[in-house]
Image (cartoon, rainbow, N blue to C red; front, side, top):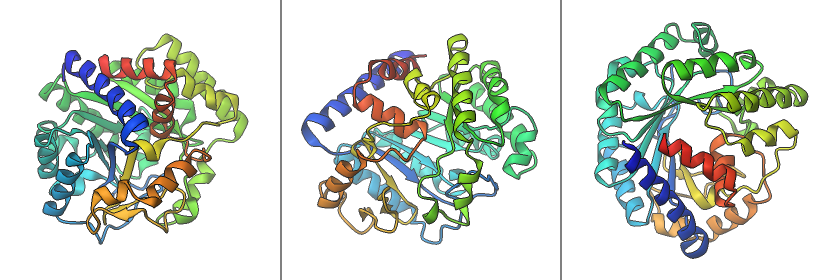
Length: 342
């Protein structure tokens, strides 16, 4: 993906926000929890579990045909570990043919095995790295995962030098001393990195005892100091993706923002449920059982979009940065442009 295309995608993102905000009032991005299966044992994961209700390839692709007709422009597949789905490459290929900007978030362990199939139908790749050494294996509970992720990244870059690649790191009690090392790792790989705090979400509804993730979030003062360190690092290292606005929220100790995530995206579960982020027991609808148009135009979606504005529980970069973008925060928009362009 060359710079001209990246710039065009950024312009497209602005157009999508303007269209949704002032005209259609409908989301345009899919955040797809395609599977909760995973061989890693990350202590900060809310989502790990079994996916007995995963839908077959044809149903997933049919959903994306409908999504495209409804004006959706992009999707990101995550998990769990999305590369554990045997049909993930068929799904990626179909999304690309439909004209969707398509990305995958992976722990990287399977990259050396599948990098060729993966990059053939991908616009961007996000690889999760929390410690810049083999100590990462211990944190993830998988021997060799750091080596595979780094070697896989190198193979991906060699196969498609234009593919947009990011590192992502969840900073917690388990890895906060390593932010400088992670920044240097991103520079050495000629890629960029995003830092974010532990997203506790609704721990009472987390899978497989995931409620314990709240125990790994840094206490207030330490988190403030950490994000100040990251902000100062950003001043010297252009590889850090976070907007200064995002970092300052945590540095202030008051992560207050207006959440616009439900206006921008829908989160789809493996069984097709569209997540109600304020109460996961009460989904907005199901993309395999209901018409997508009726879901995104429905009463429950309108309620969620309005109610979410009064919630700032989520601390992940995707939710906050997109909400800042929606509010036309100039610094966050400039940061996003740099992300697309470089």
